[in-house]
Length: 108
Image: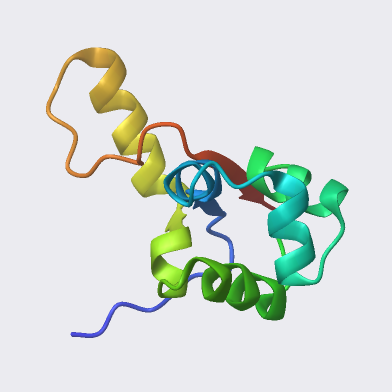
């Protein structure tokens, strides 16, 4: 049976931009901004998880690194992240890791 997405579930978007910049010869935020056609302030906010980029910008960021968008951004619903948080903090095995060093954005 197909799972139905419920609109009352909150989505958490994480990113690996900092890691990808490091792996790309320590690319600066300014260099990424120029290559992706965005401002440095926008890249800073996206990387820190304070701003969710447009779909177009998300694809452009992925193109700069030459990876699929799923290698840059990941989306989970709040309940999956709550389970991960509980597992990490209560010492149980987490079903899936969020990705160390990734920023998280909570969409309301």
